[in-house]
Image (cartoon, rainbow over all chains, first blue to last red):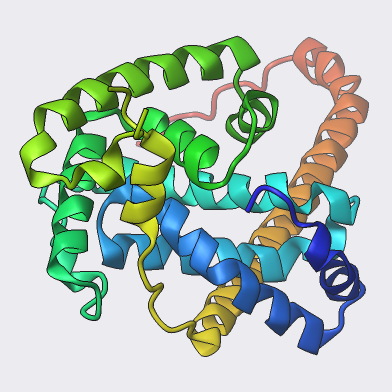
Length: 186
Length: 83
């Protein structure tokens, strides 16, 4: 997810104003936009709102993007910025309903999901963004720093804090979470 | 045992995204373009206002030379009371 190399021709064409390429690009980025927003906002409707706004910004401004190689960082920045704006306006206080996310998902997975989202909810929004960008989008601290507009050291600090808190919270919730999902075998 | 955060988060976020609604995104783009146009026309108006102010100020500089002459002129005599 961190690499957008396979999408370079589509990004180039979208930058050049080709409608079909832009549509294909939006279809490709949509699930990532939604999931990153979901990890920050923990509410499907708010996440959909943030993802749609980020995609609208991509459509409106991709022509001005300086290079296709910069797309990944730029796109994630739009998603995180929009999610943080929604979070500031109306922070999600309610616990996420895992059944509202994917009805086809088996119940055990839904329970795992609920535990993890509950643990994420303990973190400040900025730390949730760092965690999602690192663990889900596979970005390094330099790229995350660029996205958040903070020094790299600050990102590493937030990541370390978030990791410690999540590890302790998820270890405490061990009975509800299948070991093969959460814990390394060794 | 260490917690596999990456695996846990991947599992948690492995959800189906809602269907992509391109028309909703199109509406947002249109709103954005309209708002940009409004902002641009407002900034053009404020530039026009600034130009007008500069013109007034520049005109004021010329007329400022005129004020001492008025100040130096003798005050008109009070008009007699009509009784």
